[in-house]
Image 1 (tube, rainbow, N blue to C red):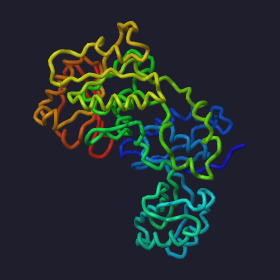
Image 2: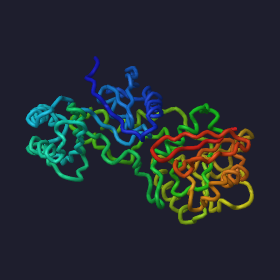
Image 3: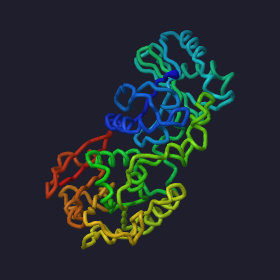
Image 4: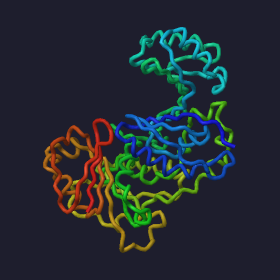
Length: 403
């Protein structure tokens, strides 16, 4: 029997909407039904808008994407939609929204108000109306974990519950981070772009190298792409409307059979010994739930002479340091370079850093994130590679070098 469908809205980094749809499509067959068996529902039609994607699905199917998807920043569920161009209409619609059927009485909630091109443009007054309607059921306060979004566009309103809590790029595996850390969803976007045309079998013969490893974000996102987010809380797990099977201990256990995604080896370097220690701490935290993951790490200045050798990364082999070397093994680079710091802008302008990276690694595939504005007008030399540039969120992008 088909269950009631609800509208979901996934907030994503602007420019990554198509990739978010692709990730949803790949993940959909692995979702579980309420009987903890593989999902048999077809993928619904997905709509895209700037900064998000939306679709309708059963509540349990839509919510469990929190555990698996790496690109969304936040997942919302539409509770009600209505027309209102007078405050009394808004008040009546909120009273009929049945928000009390979703949340436990007394739940602390924070309303996020946004009104665009609506006759009711006074956001402070809108908040007062919402507070008056729901104060008998919930504790309305600032900075509450449970966010409720009330938005208007040309007098059409939506009332949505945030199922995520903390933004989804907060994976809760990082014990510590460096200055200006890279958001994990953006690293996951770069990794998806870098690997989108590569068969899974080929990735098993790859050593992934990050010469500016920092706290390990790029390597960890690549390694954990098919692992669930099970080390953090989600707001939806406290809803009384949430299907019970999502709260069962065996739910994630039954879901863990995923398509292969590990590359063969992971290796990181950094000139800062303290950042290597930070990455080691983060790795230890991750190993409590992914014990098979290992990284090879070393202190190394990017501008050092000499080449990175595959046998130097042997300790990163998840099958053991003594595993035989595969003759077909290749080095890929995936990194977030410190442009303007350890890579001076004059080196960026002249592309000497990229030439040095190619010469020191002999990598067959290179992906790096960059600040979009800083690279405007720069032509990348082909060297022995074909360079592609893709701006995938506001103010930044990702570059790729392939043979």
